[in-house]
Length: 136
Image 1 (cartoon, helix red, strand yellow):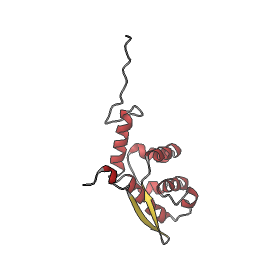
Image 2 (image 1 turned 30 degrees about the vertical axis):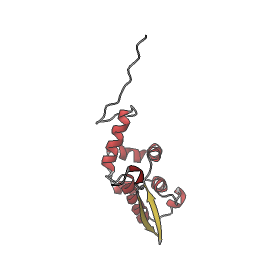
Image 3 (image 1 turned 90 degrees about the horizontal axis):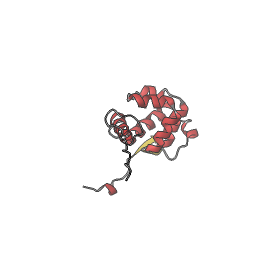
Image 4 (image 1 turned 90 degrees about the vertical axis):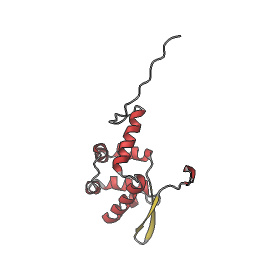
């Protein structure tokens, strides 16, 4: 069995216009930036209900930003030039490699983690509070 250091990052290849495009997972900092930038995405995230039709119906700016976050060879401007079916295939691959167990378990784990460090409320993990030190 391989150790954790020898596990390669998840990636997937998606054919787009005759080119193989490598899709990688989006890191937590980029996810936070996307959620901060796009209220509709943040609402979907908060409900825990991922509806791909709703996701594809969101602004082209949001779709392009998510695609650019998961595909190194595309910036937002070029991602916006993709056809809707190409965007859908890339988004599906980005979600698979970013959240291999699916969006629901990923969001539950992240929410619990954020709750344990006092960043946000969590239904599964209470936020910790530090005790004040007594005088010596």
